Length: 419
Image 1 (tube, helix red, strand yellow):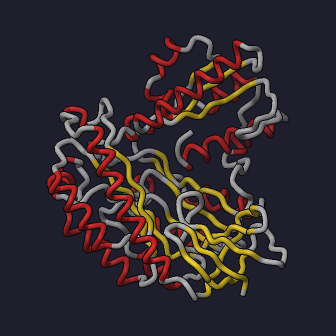
Image 2 (tube, rainbow, N blue to C red):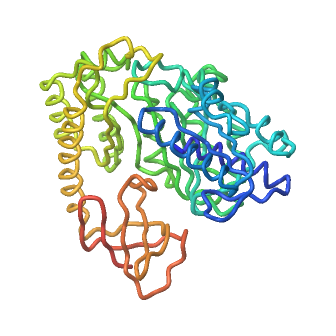
């Protein structure tokens, strides 16, 4: 359940089980003995989805379809004792740092020498590389530090070894993920080391694309932008959640940046890398958000013309700083604001995609659907961004790169022909 960071944890658990000669599959419909559910506990909708999944498997256990259920991840870290009380039918409930215990309870041996060993559950040509755990930020709305703890960077050499293992499995695109890419290295090296990590990863033979996800906007290391221009395998793409633009709300959110510094950072991105595609995330319906503050957010999006944008309505989470505030924006108003924001972004995306018609772009092929091949450009991350739909009489190889010409564009998809 949840984000790509959870997916990496699941892949590492699967790797350990496979080494123990235990047959393990990911999200399979095949009959099974044991089920491990890796939960999300970030916001209300994600928590409800995780709970529903646990309940469904409890019913399957009662029906004799499975023998044992194990629950791990963010939800169980956050509500460990409550879940143990509510779900006595579950055979094991664990937090986010108990992989060794889970493996032991399943009946296997945890192998320290195989840290980093993974079973890739994404298409074989791309994979996520989690470079740190936890977060030192104190954003008022976010429960991640409560769940995952303080920021903890993984050593550069360990990450390079893991990246080489991924390349040996056929991975060509590495997607760097963390709760906060910007802060990488400060805790173990005394300074921000994201540029150094990116540069060393770029030197690994076989890595053709490196993509950056989840950077924090405060004190972003500008050297990364210079690397985008100088190294051919660094995608001109950045995922940088901004959350809002109103100074009052940003201050209440404890974000550490202002409207002015946010706009300056976006300008720096575009001045340094003119064709960079920026993806951001925004929150609507934060406590006290007025209509005029929301209109300010709409104006900001209209002026900034983000290439990619995701948004969600504010979720009132206990034990966060914002929980002391009154959740006073009506749910219907939150939903209406979300719809208005995404309608604006859809129009922006449509206009930006129209500008791509006639261009020749490099794409990686992710899969085939019927007569069409589905690919992505360097400006698109898997599952969340644009796809390129290619009709070709020539057989294309999944995971290979091809040059295509864009022939037609919609808001979130491009159509192309092989060059």
